[in-house]
Amino acid sequence: MADSALLASALLFGLAGSTHCIGMCGGIAGSLALSGGERGLSLQLAYNLGRLGSYALAGALIGQLGQLFTQTAQLTWLLRSLAALIMVVMGLYIAGWWQGAAYLERLGGLFWRRLQPLTRPLLPATTLPKALLLGACWGWLPCGLVYTTLLWAGTVSQDSLTSAGLMLVFGIGTLPALLTSALLARQLKQLLQRSGVRQGAGLLVILFGLATLPWGSLWQPH
Image: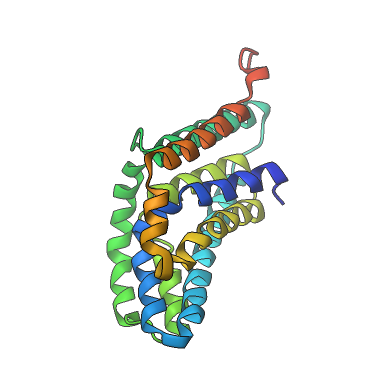
């Protein structure tokens, strides 16, 4: 299983990227809360459970893919460096300084066009099974933040369980913003979209990335 530093990083990505999550999923989460009446919270929880399940599944798949490669010192060094650089890219994306991660959304759009029709019969999601399935589908929505985190999870560990756990913790980090989106959407969105908050969160992720670069072996032969 992932160590505490990786889990903390995954949680940070989810928390720091909450402003982006509200934009991508907040509308659905808010509509579930408002249309479900007294069951609104239950529908939101079911939706998010499905969403987090898809994140974990994606993490397990990319971790399984990583197991196909033979582990060598050179490959380990390369993957650690790549993971650190992905964190830097993610930080730039969160801060709004560079939207390079958005290119991944365009690639994911090809897959989403095939999956999106499956969500139509699930709307409005007025039952727990519908909300759960809707969240499971929505977890594959093209999102540069999710895709970048997925690449990071696949590079820091070529292990299905670890990668799945990291994606699950990332998803948990997005929950506070989405679960309160119905009641506090305007206030929360205004707070998270303040340039200082976004840039501070992005800078923190960038520093995490730079700190995890294998500096000690950077100049050693590989």
